[in-house]
Image 1 (cartoon, helix red, strand yellow):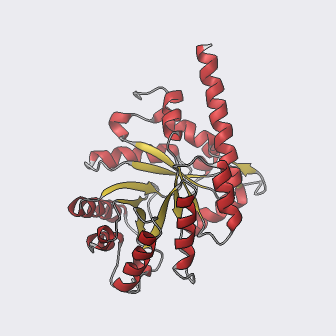
Image 2 (spheres, helix red, strand yellow):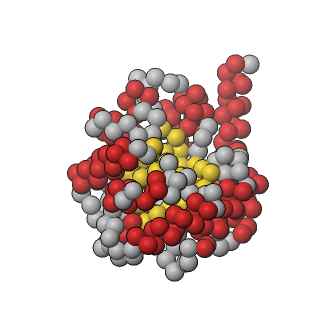
Length: 296
């Protein structure tokens, strides 16, 4: 049985969530984040093809100046050379925005330079040379359409080992999904493999069903009829809005600290920062009311 009752587990999951923003092309997005999200929140900053380094660095600097913890994303296979990586890290360090990063493999099937995967970036030694102390890597509870599960586990173990060798603290950010039972089983499998890194479970923020399905297709996330139903998605109405209420409640209800280890949430605000923050504040309000009712 789970060690923690679900209201307490929900409160713990929401206590230190993180979230994504775009690279900062839209100043309004950062303004919304400042107005609606608590200072100290970890905010991931993407790097889109065709952008120069100044754009994500500027967004990371703005987040830092607003009291957030910027987490710039480094895509290994998109790095053309060590010089590009050094320059990006140096700019982030100069902006006081590069202490924490997320290192991913990236979308290209083959590397554009000397880094075929996240472990090779971690193992380069360039991260700590530029002041990076905390590195997140990616996990895939729902699998990956182009990579066998055995290879995914091996890759995650390799990244954990690389972090340990370089003396870097780390965590795992999972791809978003809609099936809490699948996520809980993956967490148990992670711990059974003696991988103890803290995990932030990827959660899709409230958005229209059509938008959620579009992102799932783009990111290779499988949506079964069962997971759609359990998440509250009605494929028959793509204009309806679905949120993660049921998913998070199921995650909290099944959570067992002994089996699943340290777990927090990472939100992907597919419906926008404002909708995401409004949902979080509303959900917390409902949780508080439930707790007050129980103890009133």
